[in-house]
Structures are given as C-alpha cells and as structure tokens.
Image (cartoon, rainbow, N blue to C red; front, side, top):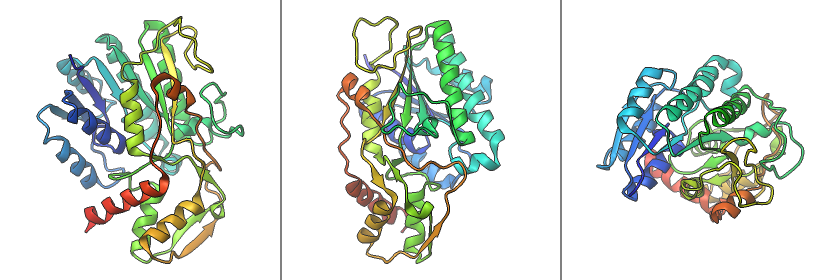
Length: 335
C-alpha cells in the first residue's frame, strides 16, 4: 500500500517538484503552503494549479506558525510520512527581516515536530541547507563535520531547526532525516536566486551584479536530482543502534536521527556558470563586479557519499544541460 504524504511548502520550488513526482506515481499528497509574497505569488499559483490537476492531491493554505490550522490539516489527512520543506528562504533577506525567519523556520518547524510526534508518523523528512556549514574551510562538506560558525541569520535558523529536531527525536524516538540542500536550480525555480535574476536581466539587456568579482564556487544541483534523492530516502528510516555500520554515518548515537547532504558533488565556479548563460542565450553580458556580500560564503561543495551508500543516489544532470533546461522553461513561461 502506498503511503500518504504530507508536504509543507508544496507550492514552493522544491516542494512543488517533489509533490508532482509523488502524484505521478499515484501517491496521495496533501499540500500545505502560506502562499506568501516573498517572491512573485503568481509563480506559486502556477505551481499549485498544476498540482491541483491530480485527483490524488489536496491542499490547505496556512502558516506554519498557526498551530491549530496546521494540526487540523495534518490530522485530517493522517499521513504516514511528513516532508517539511516550507521555510523562509534567502540569506540577504534574513539580514533585514530576521523576525520572519524566527517565526517560519524555528516556530514553524517546532509545530511540525509536535504534530508529527502526536500522530506518530513513520518518517519525518526536514529540509535544511548547506548554509549551516558557514565558515567551514574543509572542503567538501561532510555531515559529520562540525557546524558551529554560521554567517547569516538564515543559516542560524536552519542550524537551530536541526538541533530542535534532534532533541525531539531523542526524547520521543521520532524518526527524522535532515536534508542539507546545495544550491538547487531548475524550472519553476525561485526568482530571488542568482541564476534566475541573471537570466531576467540578461534578456532585458541590463547589467548583472557579480559579487566578490566572481571568485567563488557552488555545488549547483539540478532539481530532478534533488527529487530523486528525496524519493530514494522515503523508506530509509533512521534507527537507533542500527546493526548496519556505514562509513562516516551521521546517525545519532541517541536518536533515530540522521543528517544527509544532497548535492551534485561538483565544483562549479560562478564565472563559468555565467559564461554558460552567455553562450546559450547568445547575448553579451554587461557585468558589474562588486565586493563580497554580508552573510555570503566563498564556496560550497557537498560530499554526498553517505546518501549514495544508503540509497544509490547518483546525480546525473551536468550543469550546462541543467541551465539549458531552465532557460527553455523560462522563455516559455514568461513569453
């Protein structure tokens, strides 16, 4: 029997693609989203419209901070698996608007934890971020590395949710997997992300701002690879004192709790990414080079070998192919 799955942030970038994948496989999905205006709400409405075409999809609009609405939504659906992807995103926005991150990311996640425990879900999967690695110098990042030096308020709230989740898992033996996402991109992406903003400005013939003179790199991970990874871990439920010993496992010694990196595991320099945009769009890019932004980091690179050993995860999308797919979607969607 296929499990019923509750997805918070179902109209968001990652949540939409995850929900669509499960719906296509005939799995019942209940979506929950605030539909806030952090970025263009019409894009969120477009995603939701697609999901509502599936008979096995249901949806409630609400804020994570509203415990009553969230509780009513989850209890009515009675899911076996909860995938918590709703969050207030954005490093720069968190510097000017920290309160919204406390409410959505910390209080919202706490409410999810309480309810997941109340209904005794089989597996709670929570979205975290590579930003928790902060000022770490050791590359690539491994799940067992220390994560004590976050450099943005957004990253600090994500680290806080990991700590909250571990405590809850330890106290109530709630099986939890935390997923640290690495620079996810692709169709129906977030307009606040650099690649999205670059594309918009390039097509309008406007200058793009390149920080730290482009001297940074990211582990750009295509959305289809992220969705595939999430699908593969549904039944990889963390267990205390698991007899299966895995090298460099992040499994907690006191709780059914595990942290997993989910990235492309490839180092892509920002200027190479921009030059690829220029080549595919066949437009000369006007560039403004600026200093490093507050809260930003020079590099991210995932070691996703633990996820691979657990599930066979194998990201397949080369960033040049991924960019081309995004650009095809962008031009079709906005024309």
